[in-house]
Amino acid sequence: MDQPAPATPQSGPPDTAPRLRDRLTIPVLASGGILMAVMQTVVVPLLPDLPRLTHSSAAAVSWMVTATLLSGAVLTPVLGRAGDMYGKRRVLTSALVLMTVGSVLCALSSDIRVLIAARALQGAAASVVPLSISILRDELPPERRGSAVAFMSSTVGIGAALGLPLAALVVQYADWHTMFWLTSLLGAVVAGATWWAVRESPVREPGRFDVVGALGIAVGLVCLLMGVSQGGQWGWTSPAVLGLFAASVVVLALWWWHQLRTERPLVDLRLVTRPRVGLSHVAALLTGFAFYANSLVTAQLVQEPRASGYGLGLSIVATGLCLLPGGVTMLLFSPLSARISARRGPRVTLALGAAVIACGYALRIVDSRDLWMIILGATVVATGTTLAYSALPTLILRAVPAAQTASSNGVNVLMRTIGQAASSAVVAAVLVHHTSLVGGAPVATLHGYLLAFGIAGAVALFACAAALSIPGDGPARGIRRAGGGDRVVRDEALEGA
Image (cartoon, rainbow, N blue to C red):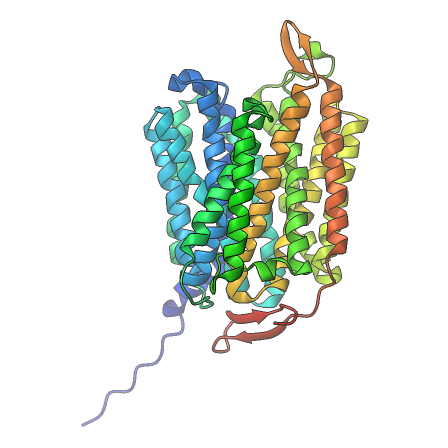
């Protein structure tokens, strides 16, 4: 009796889905980064009208921004560490789900208490970029990794540039809840696509999760950032603000002591204190300060009344469109950043980016009256930000073990967040102290705006100096692939590891 011929292996359909998922990994992760930045930005056009819409005070409404800032700062290093331990895709998807749940709650409610809690949930999305960069390190071959990481890092600026005009258009022509329904739909799609298209990284850091360390950094950062963000409103010398700063110093000092003595710390401080890592974090803080002043000050400057002598009286929609060229520039220049880093090293790219930021602010000081010069200066700053932000994660990838990539990039993003919070506080303080009456209302003077540009430009130069102080890159060592495929299992580039 004849035996049936063995089945011929199918070469087409069974492999189609895995190949499609591999091709979609970078676009899906990038869409998550863009959506995260959009989610953080969309509330800005609503702020002037939210007291009326929610029947609450302006001080209460400001917490819709503060809550996202605080929760994002706290959860970024915590979720980064959790990703290193329990799986980066799992934690990334969870962060996207929390962001989406927060958006749904905002769409369903007009109660300011619910809205603040929902915005705090959305702060979890701040961990999306460091987790995605860590996944790209683990999954992509070296020849594709640089450009992918640079693009992933630039999604923050792209999303911020897109979010403001998008939100302004929705607010102007539709009910404000529509904006959150739209972001809820996008969030659900991106979370589902992430779970389907992104492979779970095989690189893990074993051990117990440092609960005490997580609580310590949470309390310390909340005290620090609440003092920074509320100092202008409560008074920098008020007992509440001084108490928050004092509590922050004490709690973070105890947290530091605990991290040095625990076997599996939330943040490996011995790694952080190495010059290549520590100086990268310092540069991230300074770059975050310099970057944030650009969009913050530009948005206020172009909306000032024409009676001030320099203002353009633009609407919020037109304001968002002024920042849009900067977002497009960030999209176009991220591949250039990767090429510069590949040839000269990421510290050179970082230093160049910081220097370009300073040049952009010099243009703003030269002329901040003509719209085309305002847009040009803002776009130059955005270009420098692209170079700098794209280089920062590459510096971290080359300086830390693969098993600590997400947590280390999380700390780097945290430093950017602290820099942005400090920038917001300093810019607000400068503009408040340089005002004049226009039509009976206090308006910031042109001198105040130019002073803010000068401070941001000086900070960018300090970031450039910090970048040049980072020790030179060494060649990556110990790269090994899993089963002959493209997924990186281990990539130790830590000197002395």
